[in-house]
Image 1 (cartoon, one colour):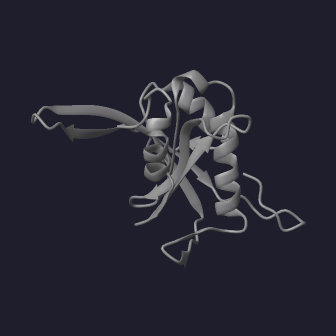
Image 2: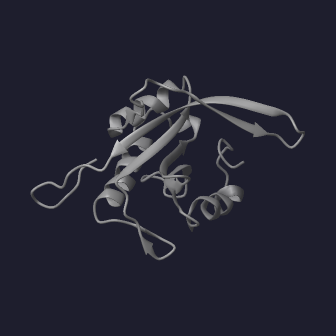
Amino acid sequence: MFCGVKYSRRYLRKFADYFERTGHGECIYSLFLRDEPERFIGYVGFHREDHYELEFYVSKPYRNRGYCTEASRAVIGQLFGEGLSVDGEPLTVDSLFSTIVEGNDPTARVLKKLGFKRNIPKDGPILVMVGHVTKTGKILDTWVEEYIMEKPARQEDGSVQP
């Protein structure tokens, strides 16, 4: 409900409180501009379903400037590198997934830049239908594609580069 709302000081605290959270298998970070540290522009992080999934959002005026890619690389680098913990438990993650709505080409391009590949089982590509029920009881169906990134091997210096 906060995504896409025009920036205002009134919403800043709500944005930060909503997106700066960890726990329950998720770790989400707010994105602010370096030159304008008060300006909230989106979020990046991951959550756990059956496996860990990367999620991100950058509001429309700030898209196509590399913010999402830069922030996602930092989170992935930390997760696969030094490691992160959620609820006080260190995470051991060998792969990271991302699910996008079919045809969301801009997000697919970001995922490919990050090193994700379309998750295609041996028996061929699949689309998954996800259903959502609105407050009025209307059912919305969405076709989604799944992408995957395997944990890269450690470099000679011990670092991991996504």
